[in-house]
Amino acid sequence: MRILHVIPGVSRFFGGPSHAIVQICRGLKREGADVEIATSNADVQGVTDMPTGRPVDLEGVRVHCFHSPAFRKYGYSPGLPSWLGRHAGDYDVLHVHALFAHITWPASRHAVAAGRPYVLRPLGQLNPAAFGKSRAVKELYLRLWGRRSVDRAAAIQFTTRQEQDNAAPFGFTSRPVVIPHGLELGELPPRGAFRRRHPGVADKQLIVFLSRLDPIKGLDQLLPALRTLRDRRDDFALVIAGRGPEGVERGLRRQVAELSLSDRVLFVGFLEGREKWELLCDGDLFVLPSYSENFGMAAVEAMAASVPLLISSHVGLHHEVRDAGAGIVTEDNRTADWIEPLGRLLDDPRLRRRMGDNGRRLVEARLQVDSVSRRLIALYESIV
Image (cartoon, rainbow, N blue to C red):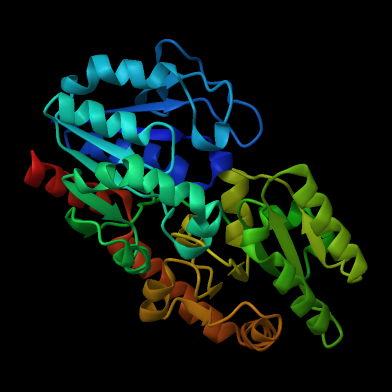
């Protein structure tokens, strides 16, 4: 079976779920599928260094990458639609990722013209917070093209129950399926490496935030909660690992200084590969206080490292986390809602260990790439 994944961009800086497509494609290949990706070189700032105009190998996956000269948040790339017009018929199934993106309507149109079924994943863009941004423009897009893109899909893939619930009011008629993202589990590094590199926090309990730096991530509410805890205890530090627009990071650093937390908050920038896993393995607690988070790939990575979670109920994966006993879910994003659970988890190593073990079991049972890939293969076979 030949499968083409179409996505606006695969830069790691777009967030975990965008780059997770590469891992999923590797899993699909292990299941015997012939898988490729069509994308643009759009990045959060500028473009990636991925070659364009010819197929390239990205971590074992064949990628057709096209230049994005402008409107990069939408993955605008004039060369990609014309390439799809010539090659959509070369594949048995197209899997289109994103609803409000430049490529969505052309990909769906070319798939239909070639007589090929396609799956559409809305990429969390129907969640209330995401849809509320430029709402009038998105409603117009749905009327003109978007609704047809969804309703003509053989299936619409949601990654969590919450995402499916958020899409229900739109009344789409395509077949809904819930299939999460998957994570490739590898050997974890031994504990202690991150602490040795950062001796200033080596003796503290480490609260880890690993995500794109964006106002929607909720750090503005978490930091005041830590300021309250700082008046009561001196045994913790927050590690902020991520990258975002310069103005966002400047604002966070300014808030940290104003709250007198500079000695308790460590900014380490964007981490990947072994450095990322060394941070997670040294973490005592993972936090994700997002106002809107369609899935929460970083939370899955934390669970894979047996780190307990403290997340908001706006994180798409929160139902699964709560059901598995893998962490604490706050019902709101007010500062007061974070103080008590932070203190409880910092005070109780047995609770942290039990939740961390539960999270690891959840990943092993349901969120590994290979099990997710098998579910996707079954979906593709059912629609071909």
